[in-house]
Length: 114
Length: 115
Image 1 (tube, rainbow over the protein chains, first blue to last red):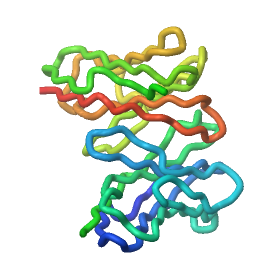
Image 2 (cartoon, each protein chain N blue to C red):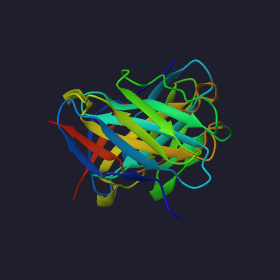
Image 3 (tube, each protein chain N blue to C red):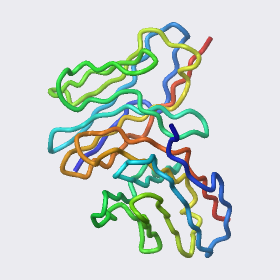
Image 4 (cartoon, rainbow over the protein chains, first blue to last red):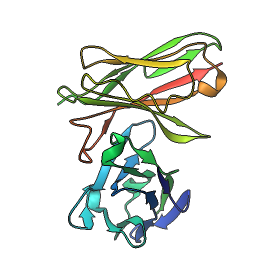
């Protein structure tokens, strides 16, 4: 079984400040990890993913995340927030033996203050 | 190229009626997934199809829910005798394969409101 916990349902940062969205997962097999972003009234868009190899992965719009197996974490960061980053962010896990269906965290709504 | 499309974008129905939600995946994608997004339950997996294999229905919440995929392409999610707790956004996603951590591409969703 797999599960994902996102700490903080709402995060507020100032424009230009560091963005840090936390994600911890539980998986009995090697996980695949994803971050998706959802803008209002839209579907989900992939930001980045970890499958194998390099543990620091870079995604679109300047986001990156680091897979830390020892901490079972996959936190999302961006050095400098833009107003356009305001959205809801979902961390998700899947696994090879589970048909690759995604198990999502509860989501974090990011607000960016001018 | 064209992404995943879903129809209708919005559906309002009366309690007890049946509804059909449609998903057109990206051409050539063999894997198709349905998820539900609701305020109370977040994002939940419902069902997935892989090629001609039997679908994995393990996420369907009740026997009122069913889905089919015709010709390995278009999929329809049917909810019979709708209840108010079925109100949610139903998201469809497709993937080039069901293994290897492949990216799932999501449609815009169908917002279902049961009155």
